[in-house]
Amino acid sequence: MPASSTCRSALLGLIAACTALTAPAFGATPATQDYQARVARVLRATPLIDGHNDWPETLREREGDKRWTIDLTDLSKSPEAYNTDIVRLRKGMVGGQFWSVYVSANLPGQQQVEETLEQIDLVKAIVARYPETFALARTAADVRRAHASGKIASMIGVEGGGQIDGNLSILRTYAALGAGYLTLTHSRTIEWADSATDNPQHDGLTPFGEQIVAELNRLGMLVDLSHVSEATMRDALRVSKAPVIYSHSGARAVDDHPRNVSDETLKLVAANGGVVMVNYALPYVSDAYRRWAADSAAEKTRLNAPPFGGLDIGQPEKAAADYAAWLKAHPAPRVTLAEVADHIEHIAKVAGVDHVGLGSDFDGVGNQLPEGLEDVSTYPALLAELMRRGWSDADVAKVAGGNVLRAMERTEQVAKTMK
Picture 1: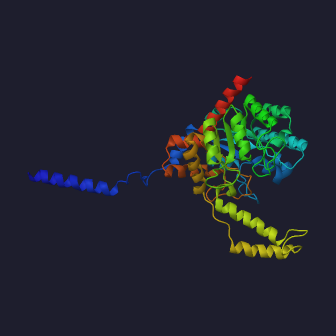
Picture 2 (picture 1 turned 120 degrees about the horizontal axis):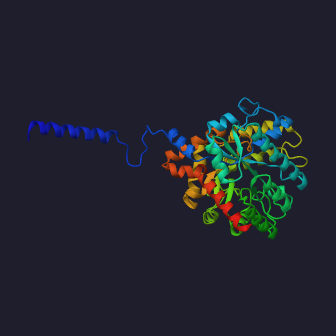
Picture 3 (picture 1 turned 90 degrees about the horizontal axis):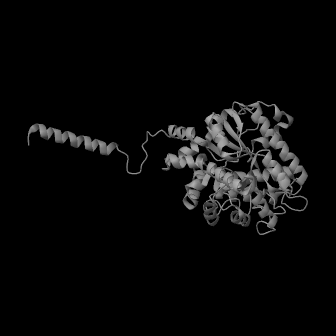
């Protein structure tokens, strides 16, 4: 062999060896991959939509009448932390938000209606005060227009069937005012539907509850099944002609909380075309935290439960000291962003990637949030985690907002057929 050929062969062998040393293993992600740039590309094309944020109620609770005038640009220095403000919404690349107009399920029905109207008014006032940032949205087309113009589409979710006070006219009024979904129950079982966190009375929906679902379909409002019992979920899935959503729930196989969705019901959600929007609240994310929280509550009761119970009954200072000692010996488990990603992946595995989204519950959980998901600026970090796990940009776009937009569009189509 000529000397030049020998040198050429040696050189090619050296290049091949170096390439083998530097190339990533099959399936590995190159260390230089820019997830932030990928997330930004996805969110420029698809609006990131969160199914549930309690900012309006938290503003009402903390600020009183100041909620109508307080500067919402940057609340990061507030004495009690907010998860939401305009600066952080922009940093989080939020394209659409269902603002919850929550009121307590413990209030009398008429008061729930009055306070719901006030909460709707507050959402509209916030949008009116910051027209360069927010735009009211009722339809999927509204969301896309707002996103294209660089604004955050602002939708309204009524978080509890008690807020209609058993009256279809009130439901229709909420729809006329722009409400996009009704959560069938909140923490309490009501006259026509069982809650996940109260004793059941109806084995799901009553006939009137089924009528509510049909009316939501007719009005083009989403049926929201967060907070409802599994029997209520299944009844609503049987009755609804349109896709349902869970505005802020998780996977029960990952964390066995009754607010979460079982694998059997996830399959029904897939058949319905619905979307489970994954919640960040610690008891719904981590089974270890859920069990710790139950132990913590039990310990407080064990120490001081007036007027008849507790080792330290009638001695609140001693009870507080004893609880502090218990807490030191039993610290709360850590809960992280990765565990929220686990819920997303499980739902995608069981129901399909077309049936999962995001529903943080920001400003509704007392700042008890996973590490890495402390406020509305952190959505890109969660999407980047999915990319690190091998998710494609197309599938990340579905989770970010594509799936709920599809559900909204289908709900609008069903409403047209029912007019």
